[in-house]
Image 1: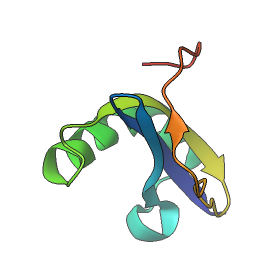
Image 2: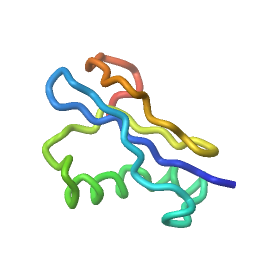
Image 3: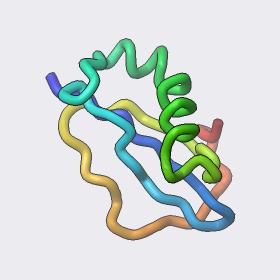
Image 4: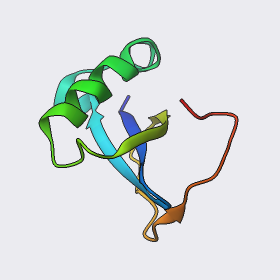
Length: 81
């Protein structure tokens, strides 16, 4: 079953959803995503174009995920990292 790791990144008040990886790309399972997502996202941020953005939150999603089309505003939610 397809698993998608999604990060919500913020730069000031602007936040974007980005797909970090899928099980098709990296072979992650839902359990591995839930346990190791922060490590994978840290490496992804350090080596990509979003290294100056802050991780607001992340989620592991079963199946294909389509990021929101519109950027969102930063908010204080309980899922914040």
